[in-house]
View 1 (tube, rainbow, N blue to C red):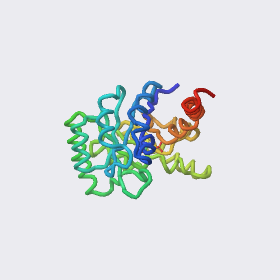
View 2: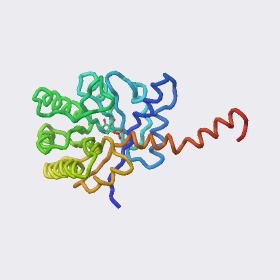
View 3: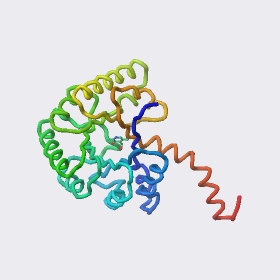
View 4: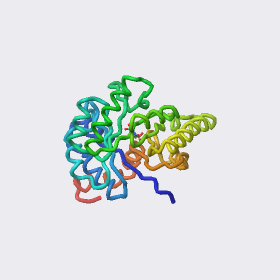
Length: 244
Ligand code: PXP
């Protein structure tokens, strides 16, 4: 057995709620269930457009999460301000585009303007006792830059690996992840990974050197929708007819 921690991303519960503008399903309730089921942490992405997770969620989650709260966010003054007053355990900085369905790539740390913005954000959050992780593509030079600008941790974007369609591509993407993990270990920076991981492809990355944490959302919430469907239908029939 390994001791890789699982952080469950509950954004997808909030997406269902946004589709109808209802109060349910509540990501706060989902987070509690994940914790009761053994999750080591809860991840939420407060997007600038508040398309799924909203301010009310992160405020309540900060009070209710008893494991680790990982707040994903863009590097903006507004978000850094929210993080500093909220005090999540970890902030994961991610690139954000309004038109994307989900986070598409890692932070482009070769852009010197972005680098400066990130290092000043890291400094502010550090002063508030928040650990900072950077969501990056699995490239050795970007891992090294992350360490230089003061990140405590990196989360390797596993999207290219999970989208690989043949064994050559899988091998190529795994090699990128393996080399990046090695570089992170050499730099003494903590290692997480995530994006697109499911019940099958997750097995292929568990060997990454010093992998400490995985952030997984869509596949877990999708499985929950199907594995919980039978009970949900039975519960509705009970409401309608008082029995099956
Ligand atoms: N890590 C980061 C930085 C993400 O933005 C996301 C998606 O919100 C995830 C992990 C989880 O990805 P998935 O929902 O595909 O498991």
